[in-house]
Length: 187
Image (cartoon, rainbow, N blue to C red; front, side):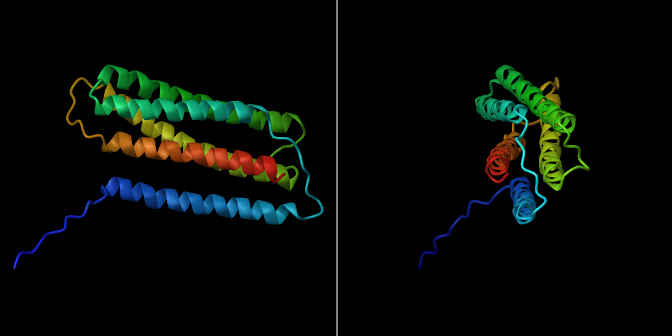
């Protein structure tokens, strides 16, 4: 009798942890958007336009998703010079995205919608602000990837760290697109 061994493809522990974290983050934003829908039905809800710079920031984060995808591809092909350029550009685009969000907050405040103003504006600050914090967490990961890329001695060519960073980066990208569409429609 011949027994056949079935080998399962195991997910790397860092990737597994990331998927758990992304699930938790998704649930948090579902809670935020659900609360937004409930509060919107109240009589004192003030509808307003989102700052236009939020749309510009969307183009920036979409471009950064492309650059991190290309960075991962270059890493896998061992084209380290191109990888360094692309991971650097991705980190810069992440910072630009966060700066655009901050400018959007300033525009809201200057148009008479401060954080402690109407509840509808407060929701925007909280939802967009918490997303921006997650993006900045991604920027920190990208800066770590950047520092590792410029080390003179490479210890390992494992693609797992850049795969984890890229997956997270695409996640905050998709999350932002969902939030922007939601906030544009549900105002």
